[in-house]
Image (cartoon, rainbow, N blue to C red):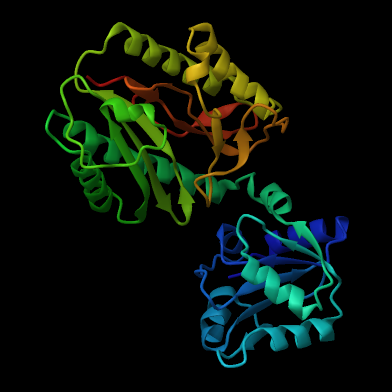
Length: 365
């Protein structure tokens, strides 16, 4: 059902920015506002939020009852497959005398949604990116959202246990992934796998390597990047293991990544800028001589999306505030040899930060 408090906040932002309406396509933001999920298809559908007054929902006629029951919205603009959406939307917008400054969430809307609205308004619209405004609402998680994130983080523990228990030469990456999936189903029936990425050997030097059928070898590094979803909210946790002793360079790299992770987790608190937190982790690795091998940002927000605001990256001067949830994931990647990443999830509190990841960060040889 539509969340009236969140809707009111969005309409207040629209009034402050003189935005006539927000077009919210099927996406995490639609779920945030309505707790209703709907997939993108060739038939356009979206929530239309004017800066004041009643919201409406454009959808195919045969989806009307599902939308009505799922959102509680009675003001539906429906169309048949034969007629298409243009005339129905054009008539509705004409009747409502909607303005021309329309906000689309650029990273969620397709040209299809833009085309429908533009044609309905006579191709005379001023486009605004809705993402900054929606992100402003979504970044600070309330108590319920935080509880979902904490359970999603806890669920990953059983997945990591299953991987660690099967970690031996000859086992394939895909078998480790299967074990992790089975463990989640068995122990957390209310959770779903959001994603699993497992890399071993030299492939660990590729930050987003993806799982393959490679068989583990003695002395391999293995990292597992895992996410579980609970009531729509996603965790994102990485641990690096080893199937035997590491050489001096990789052992040093592991210790540096661990210390960078610890330092950033300790430095996280209200008022610290996102870029400052990135620098805390980066300086540890830079001082150890591996600065160029830390090739990505220190972290990203988590919530209804695996990657969302705030981004913990150089150049982002956003002050961290209570309720912000994000990853801290420093890494070192040595092409042809191996890579290490340790990723935790944290939530900013009134006085500091709560690390909601509890799985050990040692190599677990």
